Each structure stands twice: as C-alpha cells, then as structure tokens.
Length: 560
Image (tube, rainbow, N blue to C red):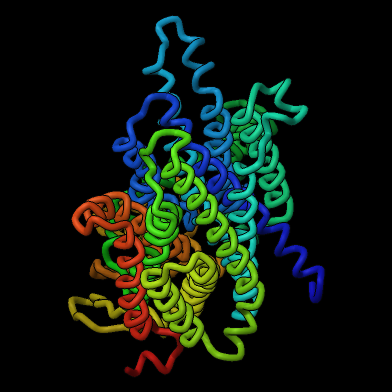
C-alpha cells in the first residue's frame, strides 16, 4: 500500500502504543497524589512506583521469547497483547475505585484501600511497560524490509511521543467541573474513565488492523491433521464409534490446544529455563547495543523523572515541604508547572523528530543520528546545570526530545537488521559429532525450544517438545531435517528470536527507571543540591555518547 494508505495503516497499527503511553503518562502522573492521600509516606511512594519496573525486569524476557514460539491460531504476538491489555484495563478500574473496593469488604479499611491502590499501580506499570515488547515484535513481523521497518518504528516512536503529550495534558485539566463528574464521582473517576475509553478504542483498532502472517508450517500442520484424522478413523472403526464424532472431537481438541491463553501458559512453562540461559548469553552486537542503550536511557530517565523537582527547587528556589499558601510553596508549585511545560515540549520535539527520523537516517546514517542525539542531549543537560534562566532551561529541555525519539527508534531498527542477516551479525560456531569425529560447521541458530527438543532427543525422547509444532525460522518458516541428518550437537548455540532481543532492549529501559529511584536520593542528599539530578544525566549522557561509537551499525563496523 504505497502513499498515504501505508502511512495511515501505520498510524492505526501503532494506535495501541499511543493509548498505552497515554494511560501510563496520565495514570502514573496522577498516582502520587492518590498514594499520599491514602496515607502512604513519601519514602515508600518511590518504592511503590518501582514495583512495575522490577517485575518487568523479571518477566519481560519470558514474555518476549515466549511470543516468538507461540503457535496460537490468533497469532504469535496478539495473545500476549490481549492478556496484558486486560491487565491494564483492570488496573485503570482499580486505581480510582480503591476506596470503594475496600469499603465493600466488611473487614476493609484504609489498609485494604492502600493495598488495592498499590496493586493497581504495580499492575498498570507492569502490564503497560511489558505490552510494548510484543507490539514491537509485531511490527518486526509485519515489516521486514529495511525501509519498511525504519518507517514502522519511526511511526511507533511518533505515536509514543504523541501519547506522552496527551497523557501529560489530561491530568492538568479540571474534570471535576464537567458534566461527567456528576455521574462518575470526581476528578479521578472522570480521568480514569476517559483513559479506559481511550485504551479500549486503541486496542480494538490495533487488533483489527494487525493481521499476523500465517506460519509457514501450516502445510505441515495440515498434513499432520490428515494423519491424525486417518488414525482417528482407524480407531473409530475398531471401537465402533462413528467417524464423524471422532473427527469433531479431534477438531475441538486441536482448537483448544491452539487457544491463546493455553498457548501462552504452556509456552511460558516449557521455555522458562532455556529463555533465561539465552538471556544470559547475548551476542556481541546486541551486547554493545544494549550497553549503550542502558547508559542512554539512564541519562534520559534521570532527567525526565526529576526535572520538575529540579526546576521547582533549583530555579524557582521553592520548598516542597513548606506550608500551603506560603511563598516558598507557591514558588515550588509554579516551578513544577513550568517543569511540566518543559516535559510537554520535550514530547512535542520528540514527535517531530520521529516523523523525520527515516529521512535523517537516509541522509546522514544511523551512526550519525544516534551519536548526535546523545551529544545534543549531553550539551543540553550541561547548559541546564549551569544556567539560571528559566527560558533557556526550557528550550534546552525541549531539545532533549531528539534523544528520546532516537532511543525509541534506532535500537529496534538495528535489531531488525541483525535478525535479518543473522549469519553476518550473529555468527556462532558449533561442533557436530559424526561417527565420533568432531567437525566445525557454519552458523546454525536454535531457539530455546529447539534446544530443549534437542536435549530430549539426545536423552532418548523421540518426540521433542510435546505441545509445539515445527519451530519457526526468522520469517516464520519451519526448519526440519531429515532422519538421516540427525546429529548430536554441543550446547551453547541458539537461534535468538526477535522478541527476546526486543525484551532485552526494553529491560534496559526498565532498569533505567530502577537505578534513579534507588540511588538518586542518596546522591542528592550527599551533594546537598538538586542540580545533582541533571549532573548525573550529563555524566551518563557523555558515557552513552562514547559507547555509541562501539555499536555495530553496518557491515563495515564488523571489521573493526
């Protein structure tokens, strides 16, 4: 679909990414006041906000790799997207109604209200953050050419930035004076009801537009069905049961086996040990990319998480714990409002650069774009540290959107390029034993499930993985070998699915949120100045700029 139809399809396909970012930005922004009103102390509030990223670090590799191997009739990625979307909807319902849910319990009280609220916050942050991984993998499945996935992830970054703009604006509006407040109950209820409506619409649009490519092993599945039906006919003749009944029973069992929830559960259960072994053995190209990505995200997230506090205390010289109505409290509130405007301008700048990202890469190259984005971020953060001008600081804050757009786009397009030419970017030697002689062969990649199946074969189990069809290759094709070519092979080699590597990239983003919440308070307490927030961003930005030189951007970098 050339022209505007292709761009419009990309917009619809990434509508869920926009809806997720709206819910995360608006929900997480509105959560701290709810926690404080419920009686949670400030020192525990940051720990509550860290529940989602910590859980994401534990489960995101499992979900990413399991989506690579799920053979559900609904597709490989969409069952996980549906399940995580249900978690987001449940959290959006629980958070504003925590007090009502606690009151429904006869033994309920403020303790249960806080418990429901913490559960809702953790569920929203976890499901919302993790849901991006199967979405990114779905884009890589639908767009395989270099130009196509460059445009796809550029639009993905644009929709995420646009969702951030809308998400930061929604809590700033006064919903308590609208018509809906009389029916829904107040500001929080109106806001979260609107978020539920937006999210449901975005989920339905994306699921309607996204039609995952059929697995290439459908032909093998069809032949297997014929064999199974033939066997069922024989069994029916022996047992005296009508053939049609046995055939319908076989079909129902086959449909149950391909159901999305059952596929998800059995995939996760079967693959967990092998996934985490793969997670610990990252190829060199991905290791260099993830290291640069981690430092880059720590720099950006340290800036975004504490920028409003820096403006309120550092530039406006306000005091957050001052008495309400005092001059110091008013200065801090005004500074936080101006800091929120800076973050909004950052999202707007990120949206613009996401739209032109493909052109920038085409004219200047990925290396120049990545390095220049982190260099501009470091310079902007350094100016913010040294300047006392509110206007200049706000302008520099808006320029940091260039780095945010780059980190949302280029690492994923580079990962798609690595997986498109695995033999070049992810070489791995293996040893094959034939007739007692060890020989070397070219690069061969196995998925974690294939590795488990190989271990079963060597242990004398002739059937391999019980619940899975033939393993999928890079483009969804099945790999099978004849009985004469079955060989005993050493462990330590694997075929990495793109979902697993996307999960690793998303883990760097989650880890970048955990690090500031754990250590930034101690750093600021030691430095006795909130400028330490931005100074840490400068340091990590400089390190990320250096590490960007080590990233493999094309074939020429492999020779260095």
